[in-house]
Image (cartoon, rainbow, N blue to C red):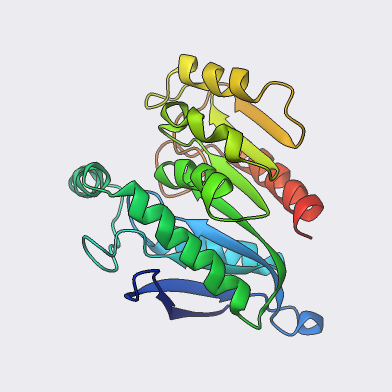
Length: 236
């Protein structure tokens, strides 16, 4: 893959890192529509970098920002119990308002890269799913994909700000996101053009991550296909 870490300038003038993965199709010359890929609580770890490379192989210019940089730069955790507790600690201490500003800075940085040919979408997982939702409301993305975004139901007052298409993926047996929370999202967006909410029965939180016990190949493949179709029709 054609990938590297780059510096991103925050709105306050500070700098943080982002993992950039570029399309490698010869006819595209390493250029494509943009994706801001938003991490789980485990940082921009090997799995998130692999997902970035995966979308780059589909022709997108992908930038995965280091969301935890204000607490600890370059967090890179695994999925064992100790790392899970570390990740939960970062989540509990996360300044989400600052995180959304950093994502807006990431969107701007991605748009400014010569390798980005135009529109930009956000895609996020777990914590990143909720942040992708907030990107749709506050960061100027052209589309947003939210995988099992915990806490979205607590931020539904932001829904009125969203003007771009949004795709939500929720797990049917999610121990972190109750069915009532998913129903609240459905009710809030009922009848909204450009908003799709898909539920995956019988699978748990984190079903897209092949490094976790919750991984479900069929649901992950189905969700990925839907995400790619959504991206193709919204950002190209």
